[in-house]
Image (cartoon, rainbow, N blue to C red; front, side):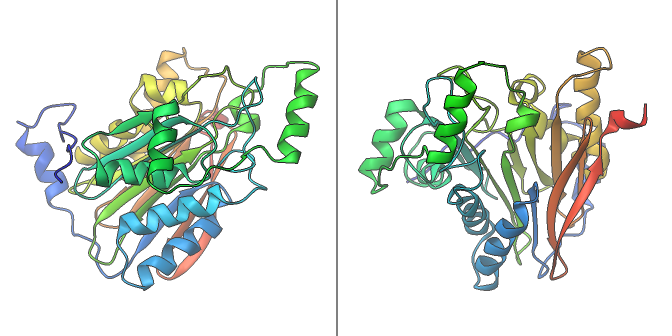
Length: 319
């Protein structure tokens, strides 16, 4: 079955030969898989991705497996089972995937399904659609063999009941560490995945950037890939990951591209945003980069057969 492809249109237009020439001159990284993911729990996720790649799996297979690892960890309170609930005590999950051909799938406001990233993959592979939400997404998952489970662990329920006593507004920086994963396989093909339980104690029905292609995740196999973490509302407003990839198309390095996208956010907030956004980016030649607004941001990188945790300082820290 043919699936809908996302249009690969540049912010500055496809008619610019100079810009396309810059990305077209990149040497493709082959036979040296790269995995890039957000936060410290990305280290274990990367290991799962590498197992897939070492067995000949595709970049999409590897990205999905990495995200599933985070979703299955009940100790991680921002992804999958064990995620902190919304204000009504419901754990609602969002996820998306995008592969090297430009195909994409996502789910939003999904309840009682442990692996939303795999449901998003199923949407991409087996339907003509890109996004399913809420009860429709749950029914689709169940009809395709996904088992329902209670995602609210005792620990998360205890934290929610404690929060109910004060209803203090939690910031995403306190409670929200989306895992985004970018992978380049031995063929040089790029894919990515993003999955989260979202902003802790959010309004019932809230959906952030994580299931939105172009915001939380974007992949252009000719140029590179990018993904986000942090306050989803602000990522959506600038179509962040798409913007990062387009900056790489114009010749920016992955790190510079991330910073340019963040400069848009800083400008929108008069130079002083009071929230966090972090971007990771991977270029077709295997080069990677990351940047964040403030404080600091950890990301895990597997490259040259080494899996290490890196830290980048916030752009606003220097001011």
